[in-house]
Amino acid sequence: MSYYPYFVAGWLLLIGVFGVVRSRNLVQAVVSVSISQSGTYVLLLSVGYQRHATAPVFGSTEKPNLQVVDPVVQALTLTDIVVSATVTALLLALAIQVAKRHGTVDPDQLSALEG
Amino acid sequence: MSRSVRYTLFFAGGALVAVLFVWAVVGMPSFGSNFHPYRDLAIGATIAHGTANAVSSVNFDQRAIDTLGEETIFFASVLGAAELLRPSKEEREAKREHGGMFRVMASTRFAGYVLLPLTLLIGLDVVAHGHITPGGGFQGGVVLATGVHLLYVAGSYDALERVRPVHLYEYGEVAGALAFVGLGFAGIVIAGSYLSNIIPYKGFGHLISAGNVEVLNFAVGIEVASGVIVMLAHFLEQAIALQGGPHE
Image 1 (cartoon, chains in turn cyan, red):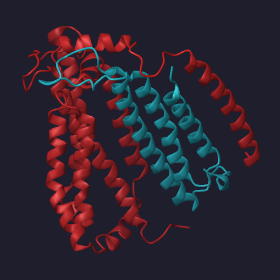
Image 2 (image 1 turned 90 degrees about the horizontal axis):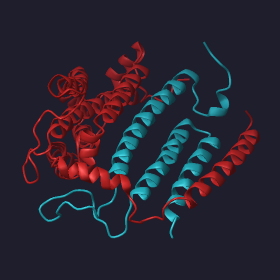
Image 3 (image 1 turned 180 degrees about the vertical axis):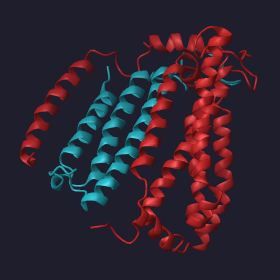
């Protein structure tokens, strides 16, 4: 019985959120969100892993067979990466706007609401 | 919210999440086991449809409608980032002053120009053969967009702007998205349901074997390459406009 990769996934999730909590820079917060999200990649891929199985890509040397790792979670991971990249891009764009309007990227100094 | 309150909240919430997570994990099948019911079903369908790359088959055939959703998320976020990064009038002027004001080492320039065609070729290969080898529209699209930006590394921002008329790539992004949606509607007309396969499956060993998967890969490849180029164009514009230092 082995659960180690699952715990790595959980650790990445929590340490990423911790990075957001203690962040003093919006760019660092955005990177921390990405780290949190990468926990989900590790989780998905570990769910689909099977020992001694090959990649789910067939060809002339690799005849179609069932002893491959799960392609469903790999496809989900691809979706996950795309969503993560778009979220990162949007958050960085927001960080640029914040920097331009307030002259700071420290979340602690962004307490006042402005119209 | 003060820092200490934030930490307290995080440690309380994090501990709870950790406990629930561990509880969930110990009830799961062990890592690396051979119990994969979804795998068995997905591989069965993949083989029936003659797609060599099972991941592409899942993404563009078995759950193509989810990929349409994913593509829409990407589309919306490019739109959002472009809107957020719209330059102001002063920034446009600043860009004209600062643009192309940097020197590039000869070795960097050489590496860039050697890698530029190679990267574009690899990107095309990854898109075109996404149904038979590892890869696909998303991955290949990102490679293509990155390849174009080697010009920025190797040459200058001006050179990049000449080969990269941003508005054309905006149309490219829309065209990719529309091709995906349109193929879905063609599925309704021809086969009776949205995004059902309308291009015959050929079976393993054929270059164009996987029906719709191939065409959808191209649609996504065009959209992702264009979208990433548009998005990076806006980020670069900001970076160059702000070169004089952050505004106070």
